[in-house]
Length: 134
Image 1 (cartoon, one colour):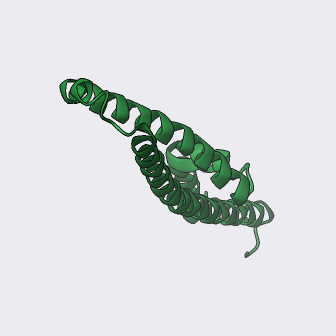
Image 2 (image 1 turned 45 degrees about the vertical axis):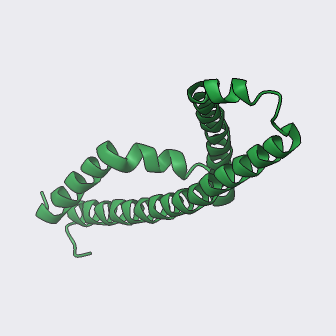
């Protein structure tokens, strides 16, 4: 057996076990679809996180909030809360866009490299069977 072919096959098997499945799943989508789906997931998770943070803040400040219950300008308070929510989710959306775009590019590049190695193994196998050079 050809030593180079065995080495390539070992690398291919290692790739398939480590990152291959994840990259194949990512590459099933177009880039835009993959990034959009991940951004939707990020939006939902960041909204849940924001609600939890607001609830924790309200629970922590419960004494002060009950004392100010009749003095609070609800419209102003709600406006500040909406702006804070918009900034919070927008920051997470921007981070998600960058991270998932890079992840897609990396997976696409690694998958392409994997397929090139696979073609090389096939060529080496054919040359061994025919007994000729590449």
